[in-house]
Image 1 (cartoon, rainbow, N blue to C red):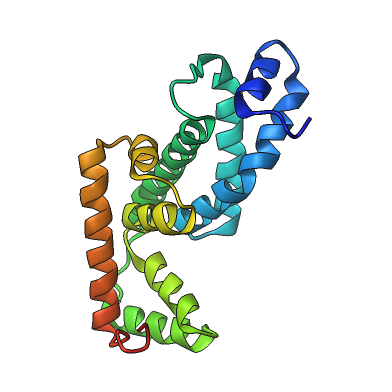
Image 2: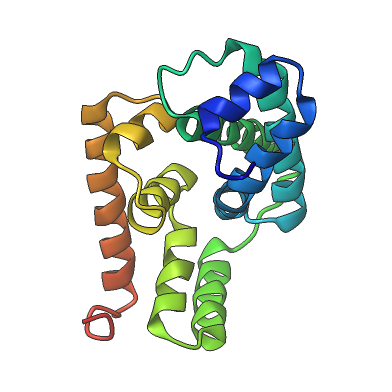
Length: 188
């Protein structure tokens, strides 16, 4: 049963075999959870968002037309769920805002990441996590999850040209972070 294509599973679910949706959950929960953890930077929030995303996908499965791959359609739901949570957190943070010396906090954070890193790759991933969420996400989707720019543009709701521009800006922002922290020699 696990050798079925996404379309076959979706058609089965649409016919009333609700338990078959678990196959899609098994197939996509790992990457979706990884994406959510990188965006939300909190495991509990990521777990909750993952459950919400699968619930939304299940409730909307009848509207899936198959014009794109299921994974693209689902990751779009995951991305929008994460944005909703980030937006709610931002509003809450703005209400509770207290003045903090940001420069000290950033410097402490950098040293903490580097001290806990076993190697440069882990440190580089820490730097990716410091990028704005959309920049970090596009780098992860493109380089780690090996998605095409076309798929990424659909997930993020951008034109292909805008996805290319965002990837370029993400690379530039990451490069700037690496240069700022004098790591360019360590990464070569």
